[in-house]
Length: 166
Image (cartoon, rainbow, N blue to C red; front, side, top):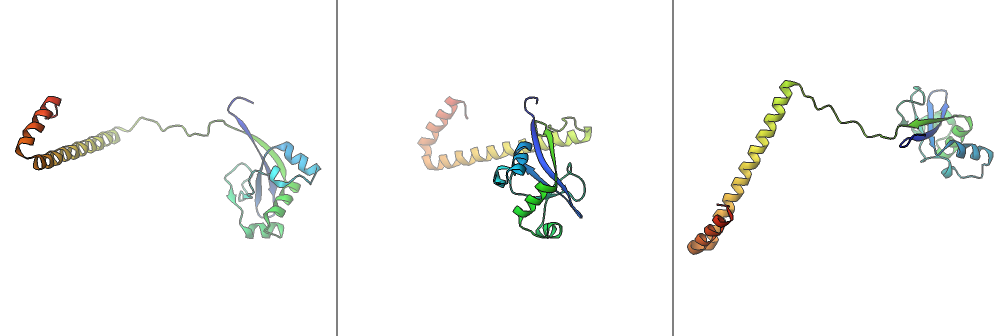
């Protein structure tokens, strides 16, 4: 198997009204469980969840099976008993899953009209930010002036000029 790829094993059970799928650790663990029932289900099943496919086969989107759906098909909504029936009567499937499940980034090409809007909104945000920075500087400067008094103002101004801040 190529690097970064993994296999996914599942058991597909075709019922009267629904198709059921459970995910299993691997094919070998299911075969070992069928030969030796003393093996706990926790070592065979990947998570105790039963899925339905709404009669769309084992390759489509899965939804969690409701208790009523399990009751209608298997006569019980006890998930352990339902899983045993699915493992006994279902078909074992193993598929290879692509290694990278991270979606590709969207295309960076924008329609011309939208690009102008994007740049315009970025420019507006930058102007608002600089306005906010100027307001904060002015407020701090005024507060410092009130707190320092006349002599302190002059010292602070000289210090700011020396640092290139004024």
